[in-house]
Length: 488
Image (tube, rainbow, N blue to C red):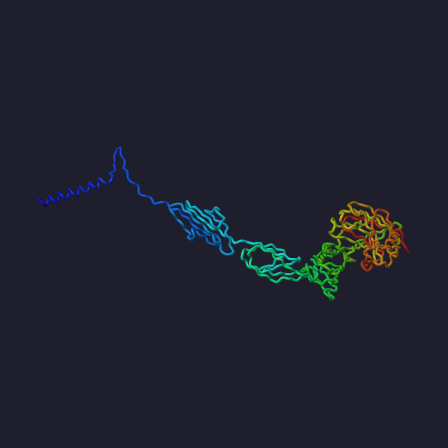
């Protein structure tokens, strides 16, 4: 009996405990017209993250620390401070890639995930170097620069500047080393100690001679392989230059053509003449003009009309065979005593010249020249008589504007004896002897201007006295020569 009682009591206790537990927990209802319910689990608060980054050279502090990653469940403030390294500058704050502030100290309220970047840059400063000498250079950290030069260098760069003097100058500054900490202009000073002679000749070599730097000097410079030469000479030096070459100032250009001397250009001004002489008083640039011409210009023949109306041949020789001269031209005998000469189409390309050897014993001649001018800037053709020490004659018209003119003049052979041994004067157009002889023995029948007077004579042209020289630049000339009177 006792055992049965104990079992009953234990079962009762168990049932009471189960009833208590069931009473505390909600019982879900299922079935028609009902639904089950339950309590959801609790969620953790969301985290707000902020990262601090640096671009360039410097440090970024947030709330006084170098902490780079921040997080919180609530919006929070960051006190920002940017500290650049030496030689760098703070440029500004970027928040999520967008400019936020240009001030190194700023406050940012972080409400969501944020990236903060402090941007630093190394400033670049202007470095200008100028000089008081044209053609001066400066070697900066080993690199040569022509002056003036405007350059730039990052802050704290170490620069070494060495002045390099042009010819004829000496530098008054020593090499300078400095650290760039701001924009700077350097003034390099040079002193002039000599005159600079610059020779430019791409084709024809040039012989240089004279009393240079106190001593007699002679050498050849220029030409292919040495197109430009600079010399430093003492002020007052006597300098002479003249073209050299295979023949008459010419050098071989190719198998069929020559490159020939065509005058000088001195400091931008053109000069003629084979030899150029001057006293070196200032910097001088001498450029040799050249023209490309055929290697061979054969002798042609015209027919001169004699007093009896018959014709006799007379050689027409390109002047380049007698003297140093450029030559560009086409020429031919066209019949009935007319000889045609065609020059360049454009002024300045080249010129032409012809020696016309007349029959011996002529006493008086008439020259008819139909000249068509093409370019107003071209050299006006002229016809001169070769005398003993100079040559003189008249220019053909038109002198200034394109067009065609008929020129007729008569020349008395006594003109040669009238001038005699009168020396050539560059201002000979005012020489009373020459002008008197021309007025007496040269008669203008139509157009013609002038006078045209040159030096050289037989020694220069190496042609018979009494020959004619026709020279010019452009256009077309039809030339006819009649002998009106023959001597004994």
